[in-house]
Every structure is written in structure tokens, then in C-alpha cells.
Length: 133
Image 1 (cartoon, rainbow, N blue to C red):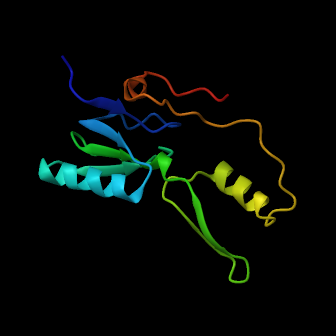
Image 2: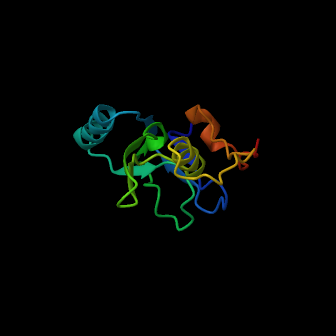
């Protein structure tokens, strides 16, 4: 029996890596708990959101993959300084939509596609990239 979860880069599919487990987090507290839990078991930690890193640096063989897609909120927005604080899991479409809601992007029109990622860890080991919706 193979243990762990096979993960890979979404687009290139060049870096299949077997992590021990995938831990989704949606709050700072959950993130702290995940890191402490891995440390308590002596396991390496790797962090991934959209899984677009094509250099192989995103995954730790046998480690705990912390899935930060749930950390996708827009924080403080300062239009004068042209800065915005966002959480680690935000992806470009959500950021652009959020900026449009705040009136920052007046020329924005929604794009009708997204790259869906599987919601269940078992689905991460599929031998093919997810299809665009």
C-alpha cells in the first residue's frame, strides 16, 4: 500500500511528489496548529496555494503540505499608497474581482474560466491536470 498523497504542479505536471498529508488551513490559528503539529512529529513543512510553482520547490517529499487556498481574503487597501494586503492563498482572479468591488479597477470584466483544484486530497493524485471549467 502506498502511503501519503501524490501532489504535482497544476500546469507543468513536472514535479510529482508524495507528501505525507495535505492540511488545508483557512485561518491564522489553523496555520499555526498545522506547523506545530508537523514540528511535533519531526516532519518537514511545505506550503502551496494554486500549485503553479514549476521549479519543484513547492513540495517536500514525506512532508506536511499546508494548503493555503483557504487564506484568500483581501485585507487593508490603501489607494493613496497603491498598496494592498492579501492573505497567502489568494489567486489573481479573486484579487482582481476584489479590487473591482472596491472600485479600483473600473475596466474589469469577469473572465469566464478558472483552474479548479480538487477539493479532496485523494483527487490530488490524478494522473492528469484539472480541466478548466
